Amino acid sequence: MIMLELSFILIIGFFMDLIIGDPQYRYHPIRMIGNGIAKLERILRRFGLDSRGGGIILAFSTVSITFCIYLVITHLFDRIHPILGWCFNLFVFYSLLALQDLFHHIRPVNTALGAGHLPEARSAVARIVGRDVEDLNEQGIIRAAIETISENFVDGFLSPLFWFLVGGLFAFYLRFDPVPAALSLMLATKVASTLDSMVGYKIPDYLRFGWAGARLDDIMAFIPARLSVFILFLGAWVSGLRASTGFRVAFRDRLKHDSPNAAHAESFVAGALNVRLGGPTRYSGELKNKPWLGEEFPDPDAGHIRLTERLIRTSAWIFVLIVEGILAVIIICR
Picture 1 (cartoon, helix red, strand yellow):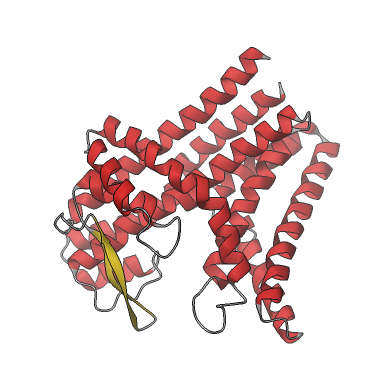
Picture 2 (cartoon, rainbow, N blue to C red):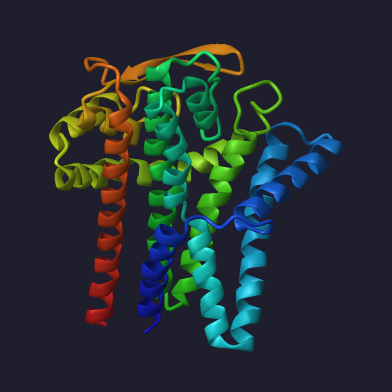
């Protein structure tokens, strides 16, 4: 029954994300994690802990505090009534998925490009990317949109769901309650990605201080990034895209970026769509000569954003079905 509870949380939470999207409110778990990171950073820097040691303390403290708060709340709700505890866990799971919200933020880019309004398209894409957008032409805007969809498929969906499964299975076979364990590892993934986005910059103020957060994010995304190639292969095959080309380009170009994980999904998408991604990109006024992914292909057009959405959505469904299948086998065999 306990694995059935995990299965229900997964499928109901997934449908909630597809139908409602990411909830926007002051006490959203990710927003609270971000606020906590900012406050801890200020405290550590005030005490002169602004180097690698301070960054390690920041990463360890953020993960530990997040775990403690979640476990205390879920325990209290469960003591009041098991249904209340289950609903809280469902809400946490739903809040940590970010698939539909990604598509929601891409739509204004598509709309502006379709109307030929490049300034509006730049403004829309600026809300979801970290690069400078002021000088982007139409192809640059499109590449930025496709790249962020591809990368966030791993960070916002595949990685949290992968660790949800791992935590649940690990706890089940050790005879612990799998739901808190699954959601704790899911939270750890989101803490790591939030740390990386807030302090993982390669600039003087954060080069050493953000090291631990960036490495934690690399560790948590290491397996999911590589798994994404196989999930996207299935998604491309079902979607009628060039699955074999995506596979070939991914295994050739997946390690071209500085990050050990960032280019896996992006390079597959480049190959599956037969477009080139990456290339020289400007961050904070500085031009970074990022390598091309799928460099033999032409630049994408606006239609490729919609194809990317279809590929990511199909791949997400496939991964959910795979995870549900694994849980079903365990439930039946037990």
